[in-house]
Length: 351
Figure 1 (cartoon, rainbow, N blue to C red):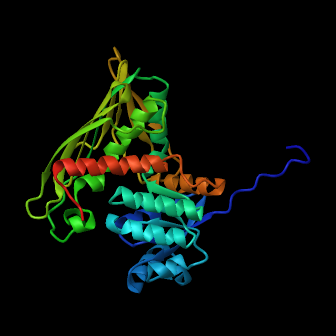
Figure 2 (figure 1 turned 90 degrees about the horizontal axis):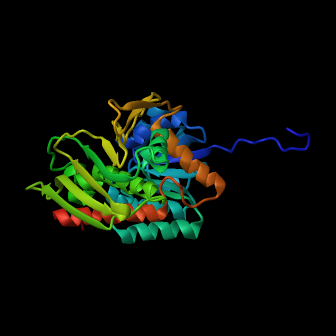
Figure 3 (figure 1 turned 60 degrees about the horizontal axis):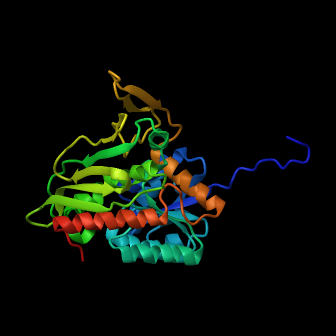
């Protein structure tokens, strides 16, 4: 370093608050211990008791433990909030947080309608705050490696994508997964994962950040009591002759994998979405045409998947960007539009 060169200064850690105290809020809180650019400071819940329990579990100070959303949003020590409420509550919470001057990372799906997405993004634009739909797998080095392989032509021209995210859950008529008033159904809960993955990789193959399908055709099964979708599949067409098959479900277990087929080979991603919540190596399998066995490519992360997401978000905040490259605003609008069209075609309607 020259004598007159300015020393590098690490950015001030982004101070996070979490809205809600459910399962995914705890997962995010745990992962924040590995964040390089942020730290968890506070929590807001519908009740003081729930907030205190969560704060005790994650070592948060009483001064930043709030039994109301308003209390968290008024906390001057909070820079950004992670919104982990059920989907139908996202719009109201996100708009309120942006109006309070907070940056917002909102769990997927960001909203239940394109109108709500537009309202959130307009609020972020008006307030000059960063807003992102929380597709955590997009920020993990495994996904970056897959994207690089496709972009450099490791399997030739990408021609077809297969992806599934499905699990078996016991029926609970009062549970979130089964209640359409709470955004229940597999398409909005987990269907967006293979759908957004296909949109992302089709885009990469075409030299873009993402691609919207030119056609989507779907089938599905609805629960006879609640009308929530329990299993659903869709086939998609993209520019460049790229096709995709995506499926999801809440009462059938599938192989939750993504497979990419190209003109000169294929890639299989055994754990494409959650990847790994721990700091441990992951593998993808790459096989060229004529190769007897696939080559295993190991990715060794240095933090948990949600810490990568929080740090990608914080980097955008520190750079003064309203959008995060891992999932920009137009990409979010495309995700929501495709999911809602999938729902419409299988007969799922939300108020």
